[in-house]
Length: 91
Image 1 (cartoon, rainbow, N blue to C red):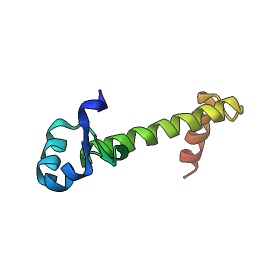
Image 2: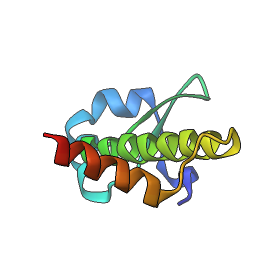
Image 3: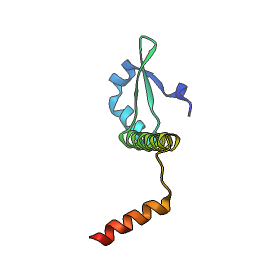
């Protein structure tokens, strides 16, 4: 995705807010907002934002899992399953 095509000044956003929101929802591409020629903000539709947040959460979980593997905090799957079955049988 090329962000250069999706760059608009803040004055454009102010004058065309409704149109910008419609385009964000249709295109599902973020829009870079500039102020005085510098990129200041990125806006995107809610669905894309939620997908991004879910992806980041999954990546964090994977990173935590990799850190635990590297730290040796792992157990064989068979051992874990046996322990869970024993707990369930004790109920």
